[in-house]
Amino acid sequence: MFRLLAGTEPELSSGNLQEPLSLRDELRFRRLGLHHHSPTDFLRSQWQSGPKSSIFLAYRWALGGFFGVGVVGCISEYYNNGNFFIFLTNWGFVLCGVTSIAGAILVTIYHYKPETWVPPSCLIKVYWACYWTNITLACVIAFAYWTAIYPKDRVLTNPTRVSDLYNIWTHLLPPIFFTIDNFLVAQPARLLHFVYPLAFLHTYGIFAILFYALGGRNLDGKHYIYPFLNFARPKIVFKTVTYLSIVLVSLSSLEYGVYRLRNFIARKLGYL
Image 1 (spheres, rainbow, N blue to C red):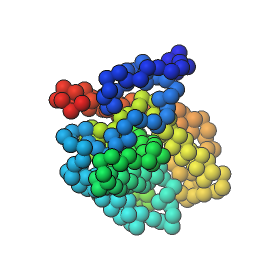
Image 2: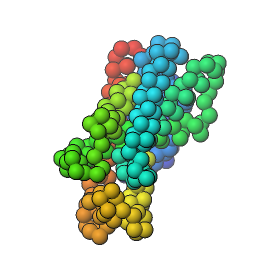
Image 3: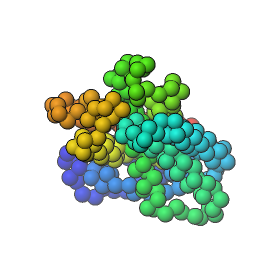
Image 4: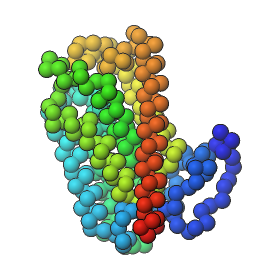
């Protein structure tokens, strides 16, 4: 807590802009921000030898195409008069598509620009916030689904049931693919950036409150989206929100650990 209240701290002395901060420096209020000294790190792979890589560009479009096609297909198949958009899983899946396609577009622009080109700071900040929200939320959704929802969800009479293909596409592949992506990219991570997916999660909570208060009905005809977000039972809702918030912070920290591991290995192999 004292570190959070601290003032300025010395800049990195190594000159290596990918060198991770010490944990001591991570716990400062300024690390809640989205500033990074080298914006092009968001457009490169940790493992490419040159400033630009056609392989990384192709990979970015493969990832964007995979989730872009998945989102379009899922919406067209399960739109259900707009009910597709009431579920947290689908919010997260759409974010997977948006983030991965945005990443592909940014890398494409960088690839064909002169090497002196620097991407606009505002775009990189928005992308960074979306990226970390996406990767953390994908893990939270998968954890919550497979531990609490899966058995009842696969009942054949369940109106929200989707095909096995889309079930795997939305609930299993996002955390796997984006964790791998976290290991491949050159961009940094910040321990305190759990605030962005947490804000997203609580925004969904506000949506769920409005859905309940305005008399919305899910596909079962109930006045709530999920049983554990039934606001007629506030204690259950409070426990759910608290539990998911703790899980989210924990999973965000694990993804931060992936970033630290990536940098450790890259340093040993001479990529830093």
